[in-house]
Image (tube, rainbow, N blue to C red; front, side, top):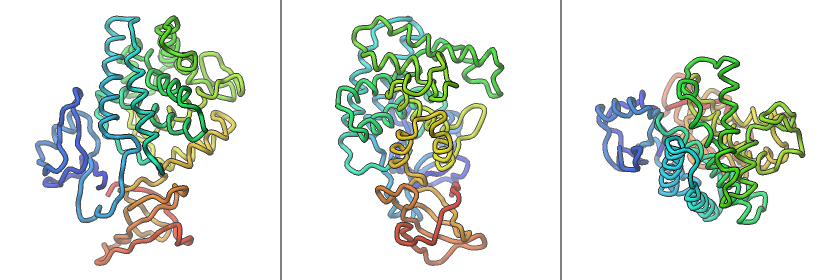
Length: 353
């Protein structure tokens, strides 16, 4: 299985991972052959890529770090909660706890985890998919830090609801395709206040979850909002969500920019350790993120082209790859290289095959 941009589809490819509609039904089922009419419809929905099975991707190990049905059901739950809040105002949101618990159990069920981000997003579900991804990443990091199950669940709830207040920010600002004005930026910043006010008096949500909703944009150097808190004044749960939120935001396509490559986002997190992000938490986080995801096209330091076959646990920047050609030609025989064993070969970039 490998990822293919919609624009690169030629028709008749075999779908390897289903694409869902906003209500959870299939837009594309696994195993069907792509027709160009499907491609046009996917483009209309803002789907940028799908996953296919072909000869090149044979042997690629690509598994989501939470179960597919859990991801989809949680997106539906977050969608329902946010839509109800936007139309009805302050209301009971406790059903989100079940979704959070499902994600916790799904992550706990995995043994050796290297995160390959493989969820397929439509433009109309960015907020819901983002909330679920931030939650899953935060749960993973919390578990690796040794937090007890109750605390992990509270962090998960806060993560799922961290952008609750954005439903009260005008859509024309959230979806603006050019840089925001200073006034618009201040309006967006209010989402943390709106979200907190919606749940501040709720008895079913923990103080940890509440503080995440209010402070997930605080930075340890004091440059964040709404309070400009520094260092130890910021709760560790908030520091976790901050890292996961920025990571998922940067690897996602936005109306005003293309998605960053994962290795670029990892470099950004590392460069801002001790400035925006807690150094120790960043160090733990990046241990479990595939720098070069399975199924991704890669370029080596010698100019050869290849595809990532699988990850080496504990070494997210040194996967097993298949070399398929160089700048001038495709090789008749492909070569598999374990970068954990071959210390002289390096990946310098990724590309869409």
